[in-house]
Length: 61
Image 1 (tube, one colour):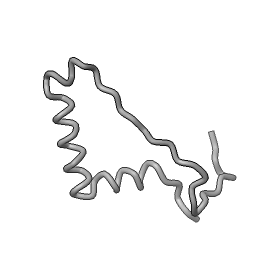
Image 2 (cartoon, rainbow, N blue to C red):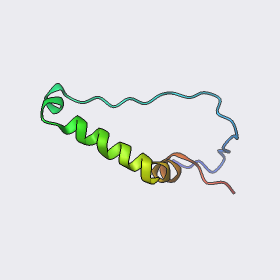
Image 3 (cartoon, helix red, strand yellow):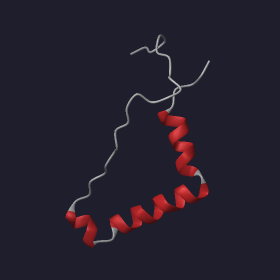
């Protein structure tokens, strides 16, 4: 799919929150806690923001 004629706007028209769901089994074996810790570390060191910019924004011309 080509998006050559799509132009990013400066302001969002709408936003939609994103949720991640884990199995209850994962809660008991610590996977959720490990995920939360890794995500917090990524936010603290700037990796999270870099991923957002790289994969969730369109390049400006």
